[in-house]
Length: 283
Image (cartoon, rainbow, N blue to C red; front, side, top):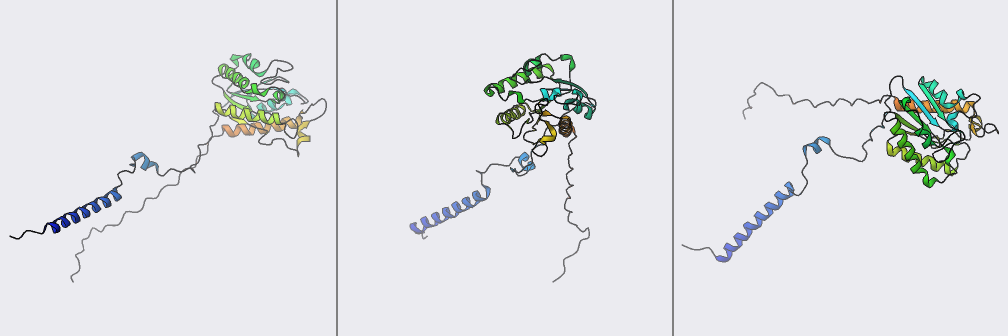
């Protein structure tokens, strides 16, 4: 019997090992065990994208006949209106047809005491707990624009904590300061920005007459009474305008969300399978 040459035997072994290694590499390349596995949830959710539409803003939930508290400064008081009942806060309640309590103190702010009462925080602590409003509109205030705004955030948070503790079930909307002069003063713009941020931290809707440019050069003379008696407060036309803008903003928050129904997905038709067996043609 003739034995195979030792060198030829070794070459055959190495060749076989090479083919085996190549096969393993090809299998791993297709299988990719190092790649993360797709869970059923991930497959169902589909691909992720940064372009996914954000969730709609939270809406106010109010009863059919809500009671409302409008709290603020001289603008809420109705300053410069020919009658206090023509102030924006009273007009707002009339437009909505809601039972409205108006609490406005001239000259007051979160840091500044008013002409007829203390600052916002003390005033909120003195509110009647039996009032139990369904909605609270907190307006203002430009009266803090000459105060030390480094203390502003703490004063606002303390006042709002008091308000929440007084009426824990009430929805709160913050109406920022409106410009009494144009261009908007820098401290007024800073107050607006601070209030917007603090309201967002609580999840409260914020309405900004400054950012939304409720008052512009085109209509300033009609909306603001610049006489000595008016002292840069809204005129009757201005109060009416502010009431309409506020009502429109609140109505948008209380309107039911319009959810568009998804288009039905048409499933592809199943292939038609004949029940009749056809014999293959003879060749």
